[in-house]
Image (tube, rainbow, N blue to C red):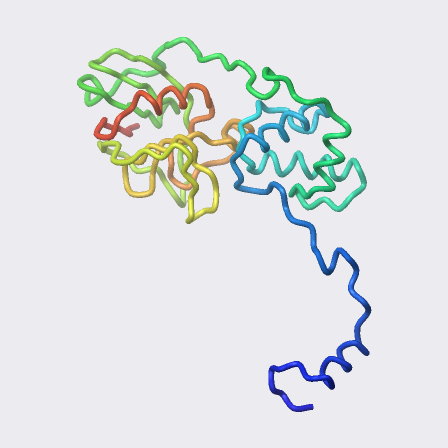
Length: 243
């Protein structure tokens, strides 16, 4: 048979002889509704519905990350279907049929912001102006204005291979719904201070704590706190990372 790259009758007849009639699913493969990296209200509803079945045990965030993927896999395994970790129409229809429409409180549960109790003696560079004062010794970020601590949150840093750099910087860019193209992962409430390193919310930190690390960014696990902090911080505010 001539290799032309064009389908003539002889090529088509040979192909038909070697294959079966495609199924409807092969002709029209199902479209993915939700998957890793998505950020939407539908993902938040998915998390709330999975929570009703005890497959998702965290507060809904709307971000489809590792925790949500694991919860979807658990649900699919419980139903005895292929555990892809992604949501197609069949999975969504089954989940909706098994669960109730989430309430507002299930979708947006109240989050307690801890009272301000400075966990460390502030670096002297943090005592003037508006500063994100970040201590690697105590794993805390303090939002400090003119020497007064306004907020303190737990933070997580980069691994040994991708360390968070120490020094004095400033916030040069804010991106509320940022998505990392380098690591293909969500970085909500990102406040960039040194190249690609930023302070941002981490679903993985919220779910797994210090059993993990970032790629160099400063992870925050309290979503309500960093959402408020993101609104308060402006470009040009200083960032101090120290031991």
